[in-house]
Structures are given as C-alpha cells and as structure tokens.
Image 1 (cartoon, helix red, strand yellow):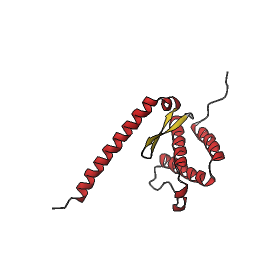
Image 2 (cartoon, rainbow, N blue to C red):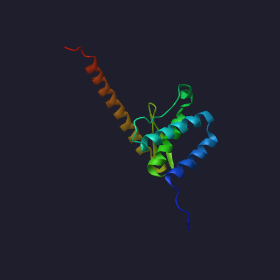
Image 3 (tube, rainbow, N blue to C red):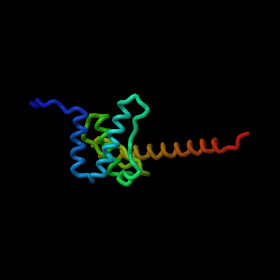
Image 4 (cartoon, helix red, strand yellow):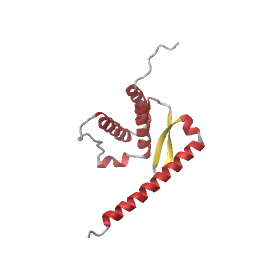
Length: 138
C-alpha cells in the first residue's frame, strides 16, 4: 500500500518546472517563469494592476517551446494531472490534452476542425465589426 499523500497542484507545478528548468535555455525559462507568475497572480488577485511582465528584449525568448510549457503548467494547475501532451491545432494554435485523447487521431482531428471553424467565425465577425466601425457616420 502506498502511504504517500498525493502532491498538491502547487507541488506538481514546482516539480514539473524543475524538470523544465533542467532542459530549457535559461532565458526561455526566465520568460516562462514570468508567464506563470503573472498568470497565477491574475487568477488569484482581485486587483486590476496585476499583469504579465514580458520585457521587449525578452520577446525573442517567447518561443513556441515556452508557450507549450506554459500551456502544460496551466493545465497542471487546472486539472491536477501531470500526464498530458501539447497538440498543434494549426495556425499557431495549440491545446493540451490528456495522453489518451492526444493519441486518438479522430478526436484530435475533430478538435482541429472545430478550432478552424471557430477561427473562421471570429474572422467573419471581426470583418463585420470593422465594417461597422469604418462605415461613414451620417
């Protein structure tokens, strides 16, 4: 019988970040840390003055790898599960799925198609709104 208590979500994130730090470029890890700290601050604060501070000179370090790791950390916080996979949805979009869902090619394709449809609808809605804004005032 296993007498060990399960890790809290905070401990899971700390453990995961320790493994990421061991393999990630230090500048990228610093940016990831700012994203995580800022996001947790946004989630736990009632203040409008909390934000995510990514300096202009750090933008070069905000790579797809950093973004993917950020998604995983937020997923751990949301679900309490450490076994997941980042799935590319196309056009720069990604999501985090549990390993079973990520291995289901049909399910992943359904998610990709749904996401593409949502992007198309948002684009159409944005075009309509731009038309309204740009319409001559009478």
